[in-house]
Amino acid sequence: MTAATWNLDATHSGIHFTVRHLVISKVRGSFPGFTADVKLDPANLAASSAKVTIDVATINTGVGDRDNHLKSPDFFDAAKFPTMTFVSGKVEVKNAEHFTLHGALTMHGVTKDVALEGTFGGVAKDPWGNEKAGFELKGSVNRKDFGLNWNQALETGGVLVSENVELNIELELAKAK
Image (tube, rainbow, N blue to C red; front, side, top):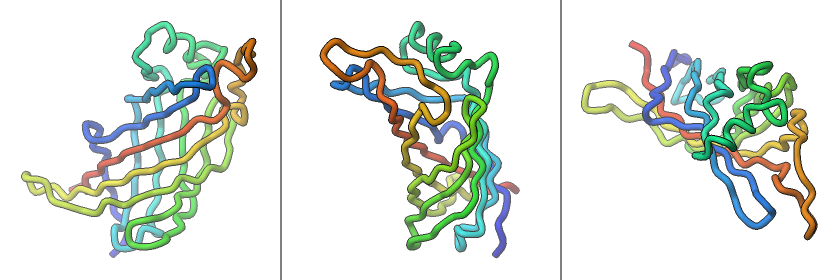
């Protein structure tokens, strides 16, 4: 089998992130606006590839003022850098369910290599006969590596917003007909 085109099932997919706030708690958010171009061979994950494009302006932390600040030049500068992209490179298969996805993440005009730990949930047919595949990807990036430097020092030590950003991505794909 060769890699075939699979389409994003956006209603069953999500790109989520978590950052520490005040060193003592976590803030979670998501980017609901994204697309994915995927070539997938479920029997040979190493032959698969993907390009994900994220609409930065869709950032959602549940707090409008915070979202507007994140879109501003202090952080993502969504007007100047409206998208983030991830282009896959090597897929390092560990076993039938686990892999490491290496690729290039471009954010805020900076491109860096990243590695995401992946879990392949398998393939199933939905009640309408569509072939679906499920994935979960986890990783982290240092936002300062991408020029997202804004922060405030705390009186008690530490900073307002952590540099490390945890990523958790769930993807459900439908095989193109």
